[in-house]
Image 1 (cartoon, helix red, strand yellow):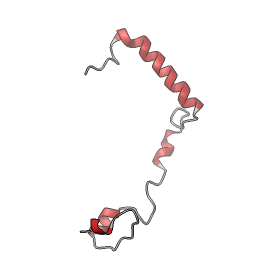
Image 2: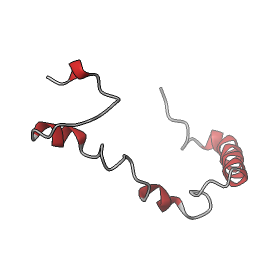
Image 3: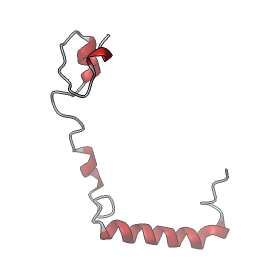
Image 4: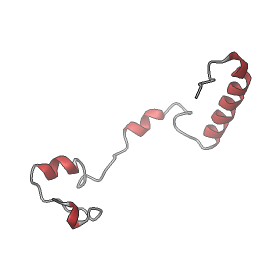
Length: 74
């Protein structure tokens, strides 16, 4: 594979694709294109009861998780 992004022969295609991408992101009101991309760093990534699941399990805490099969706990 060869990265053509820096190749001047593809500069026009690269600019056109960038413009298309930015138009579509604006139409979708994507926070990253509207200057608020940091919002993704503030979303919780797990329910409080499931956070740090592995570490808590390894410390001996009895975990309730409907998404883990009983046979997976060994």
